[in-house]
Structures are given as C-alpha cells and as structure tokens.
Picture (spheres, rainbow, N blue to C red):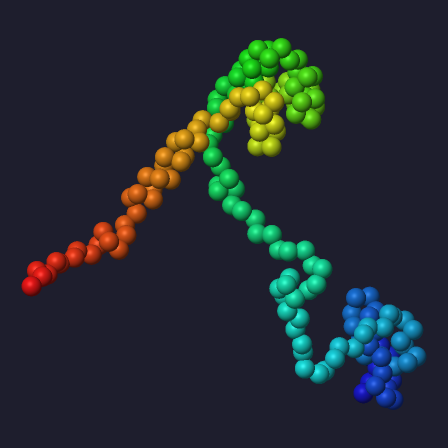
Length: 168
C-alpha cells in the first residue's frame, strides 16, 4: 500500500488521518500532518432500538397536536373595545389588568387599540381576569354540533332490516 500523501510504501496498516477535510491513508511519518480518524468496525452492524421505552431515563415522546384541533372559535372583531369596556366597568386601569394577566402594560394597550391580536394564552388570561368571552363560538353550540354528528352517523342497525318469523 502507498501513502496517499507522500507516495512512500507503507509498512503495516498505516494510519487514517484527516487533512484539510479529506480522509487519507498515510504512513507514520505523514500522520503528524493531520488528525487521526477512528477506524470503523468491519463486524456486523448493530442498531440500537429507537423507542424511548428502551432507554431508561429518557423523556417520553410528545406528539404535537394539530393547531386546528385546538381552535374552538374565532376571535371577535371588536375584541379591543370589549376588553376596554369590561376593564373600565370593573374599575381597572391598563396597569391593573397588566398585573392581573402578568403581561406588559404596553401589550394590553396595543390589544385594546386593536393594533395587536392577542395570542391564545394571553387571550385566556384576559378573559379570566375580566370575566368575558372573546371568541365567537359558544361551548353549547360546539356540544350541540358534536351530538348532531354522532346522531347522524350510520350504524349497523340502520343498514340491516330484520324479518320476524311467525311463531308456531
């Protein structure tokens, strides 16, 4: 075998080194010019199981839910006016509402002006602090729609017809 760097004949296995990003099989004299690369095993490959159940202490895999599964309704168009009206009705200032929701006062002011659409987490905290709803769809209509969907589904009893035989 020849050294891939200097061309000399290599006695023995030689060394595999990385020089300038290239992996070369070199002689012992040229090995000092690069960093040694670990030799890969030539034996059978063993693959570790990928499930987290086999790895003790590994955190469980969390499956992300689809964003559309979490949507319950749409934010009302006049959310800023509703927030301002409910806040003034309770006698709160924007600073009081900011403290109650653990948000910045500037964020509350921008939401009230309609310059900023609140994220779901912020919206729920505002709703809780003021005791209002900012979504169009009510829970009753959602429950009604789910019952209607269940009622409209076809069952095996709907498809089959039973014939009664006369008893003798």
